[in-house]
Length: 392
Image (cartoon, rainbow, N blue to C red; front, side, top):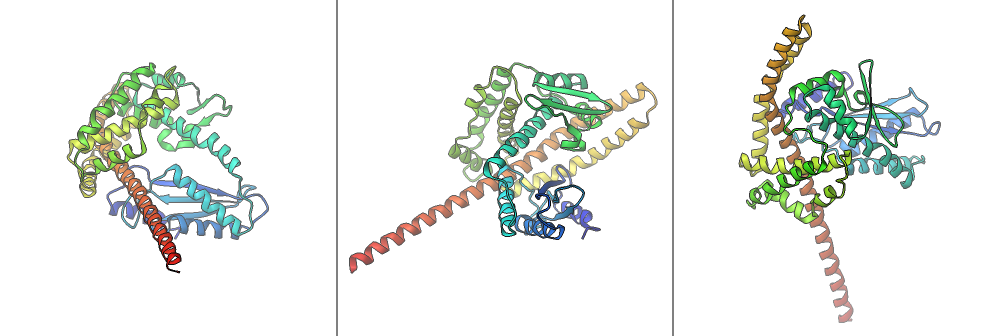
């Protein structure tokens, strides 16, 4: 129900000790002007939500009439009420949503985009925004102050507009500025970017030399993966075999783009760093089963949440401070607390990502098993048919 949907979602998060991180996912389904009634729009939206998410996730469906194009908004709880697992928001999920939406629209006799239109729309918006977000995150964790943050974005080829407490960026060949807080949420407001810069200590000195970044990412990963993925019953081994099976190795794609640092290069290095960090994490804490992973995540939340509350109170105190000396003293306290929170937050993030990755691997394995069984069944059917023909 609308009046209780927020609290119901929060209750699920508390039940599974997953109140941090991404809270919800948002999607929009739009319709051509004048070809459908508001009642039909809502009916299609409800069918879409039930088919895609209804058996595992809470979702609010709203139908908006405030534009020429009637459209549905979907707000999906990031944590499942069924098993407490987080929603895995991938390109595959995006494609399934489009395919399901198209099928429902066709059942109602409505227009859908052609494959070419879909590709062009996706390529010019989704990927561009994904790279933009990666670039902003990279700039935040590799800088010690706001001015250097702006300089890194400029090194990455972005035109930065910073005025009236609003930060907008764009990158050629796109001509339109993107207001990053509006696009990516409150975490990317100027105030919160400043907070994140203050709370995050750079792991490496920033360098615009792409070879330094490539060497760091690739060597870090290879240094850890085989050494720590030998236990055949472990989660790590499952991930390692999956990478071998699908040839996950971005060395060549990294080295193909070394003329200058770019958002695309940052995205590739981000993948390598993530693989390395997952391998190192599983080995350090000797985590071999999914239950051990979930227990570790719960413990990390219990240690991190009191520290986060203390830091939030310090930021409130920072707003009330009247002198620069008071503010600086509070900022120093925040930095010290952040040094305790950062490794815990990283461990929680790694737990979430590993669980999602293992789920994907198992889905692939299940699909392969089904395909193999289907192939075997068809071979047996063909053999039986031949045997019957011979008997005649």
